[in-house]
Image (cartoon, rainbow, N blue to C red; front, side):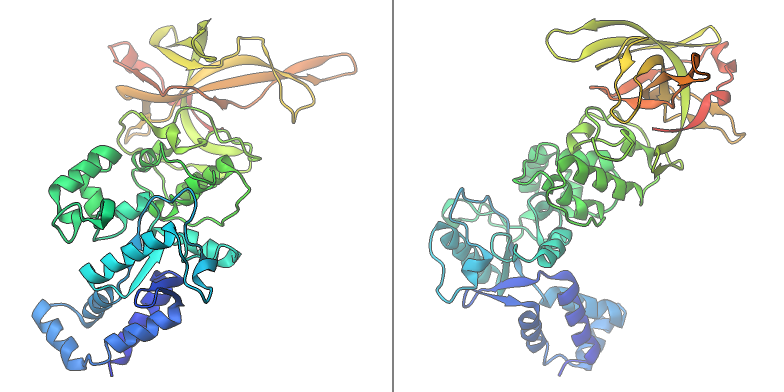
Length: 458
């Protein structure tokens, strides 16, 4: 009998890291984790303490590391990555009936299982079509949260250490046992997906490189809109409660909200396009991964921020800007607009952006307000400003900013009088990223910029 800690490690791995149900390839039946555990305990039954100590000496590893290697080498199953048929895929209910399923879906899955068993000696396999009981909310919730470990299209390329492609008739596309070891295959995937060969070979989940990772999913289509967000949980190493019916934008808002809880990199707020429209007051979070496509390069900017019940609380260098000459672009519903910014009479920049900008004095309708507000001010909110060791603030050479808009609304003072009250700055959506170059001359170097840094709620 194997040492007890080996058996415990196998049990923990199976119940923490493997799917709730797997296909037992020899009889093409679904089995639960208990059956999987019994199988692999039998596999290591003959392992002795002497075997473990021998590996410790040979590999110069600790006992814990040797046991981890044993578990990961012995407890294996194949994941089926495939395009679903328009109809005829095998369901969980089909696999749990007494009569074996038939049809094109089962034939496809049976061919996969045959290849996994004959080429790699697999006893177990997993397919997203039939290994999840979608009528069980708890099982569906756990499955979606764990999809990075078990596979989900994009994640199926990243998570496995070994990957094998087959073509029509289940003919292997290469002679390699592991196509991740094939240079030409990896380069083809890199060109098709924009995922680097290094990340394809050795991907580490986490909340870094958010924009780059979002672009991998930018053109992905899902049957359920919420799956755009749910399928990215494993890539960013975050967990969301599953709530089908909430809509794609609310699900994506919650994904970004979860990511920023584990990151202090401001680049996650550098996006263009439509904001996520939810019941949260902030419009500073994007509506989909497509909003990150084309993000200008910027090194990490680490600064404190928080998402509160009044919006995104963040420090910006706010440069006053005049909206000048918006012109209607008849090719698109958006307008091209220019913003001119100067400080103390010194020219800073002219920025050209695309968006639906209101002119000064235009009314802004707000369903939650008693009266309409009026556009009063625009500004450039530079988020990648520099902080010097002495505590001063400076503009970098390549500035990245938000377009900010502020409104005023009448507030009654007496029965017949009122005064205009300024509302907080709000981020105005733009169709393109807002960027400009700043070249300081002798006069601009003396600009007092620290006074322009404010904490705002967007």
